[in-house]
Image (cartoon, rainbow, N blue to C red):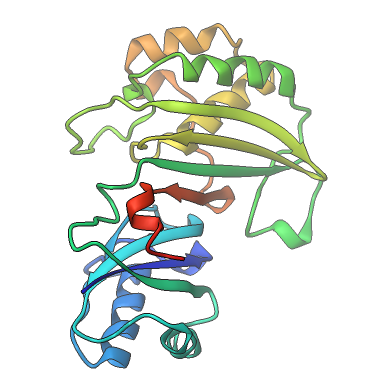
Length: 250
């Protein structure tokens, strides 16, 4: 049987989602827990990679097992075993051909910024003390939705075949003390969201204009875009799948 597992994690202690030869990853911790409790070797295929220090409020992976894995008992047993910064939400059977990465139709990230020193968000948001012009930042963000090629925001040594992404939403909102940037697309390039946020902050600080975003995108040059903001403010918040997969999850 093939199963999907929905889970969340605080990324501070991990070198991202994907297994690394010499650093602890979320994938390794989860696979070890599943293998121990199910008494068989379990390998998880994640919906995507998150970089070191990035958080996930909603993440999915799939795995195959002969054991019956549905029901809350397994979720409770896994959560009792896992460290406190990783939590299983649910496990559910899916069609045999369902794939956590390739079947995902949409992903949403948030980036959190605080403008006042906040001891409770030290590890969960980026502190920017200078005033930011949100209206100008949103003008620049709107330009992203009209474009498809995001090579200028990609890590240069990446092995992707295409830099095309369908960005469906890119917007800043104020939520209490936080400034939250929400971006939704069919796929993201490595480091893309953090590079976009750094570029938008330049606009908000008056170092760059919204129209300059057009030039940066046209350049396809990472050096033209802003610096990458710290990982600690970035959250993967939602992943969408076709109904035939998620409908299995009553």
